[in-house]
Image: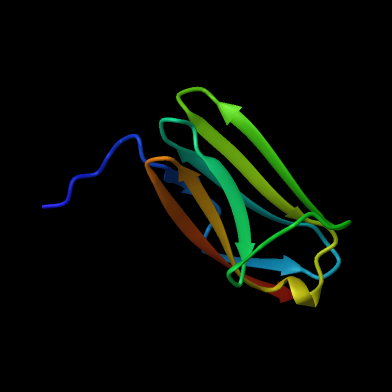
Length: 106
């Protein structure tokens, strides 16, 4: 039997696992997590933390009930932006990740 601590960071919603984006257009991934204390959310691509660049933006919004909403926006998206992305929610009680696969189309 495994007990789950309700205070631990838990991802409660996110974008669909498989995303298709158009080259030259905006690619958006969304993640929402909760925990007590409210978790922080970081974004990763292929296991490496994503940092701000001219075409990469992060948006975060604290919501009621210790929920954090986060959006990763890549605009414009290029061929190099395809891959496996992860939203990682973290607080002092635990860590949870959700993966997303992003492929491009013309």
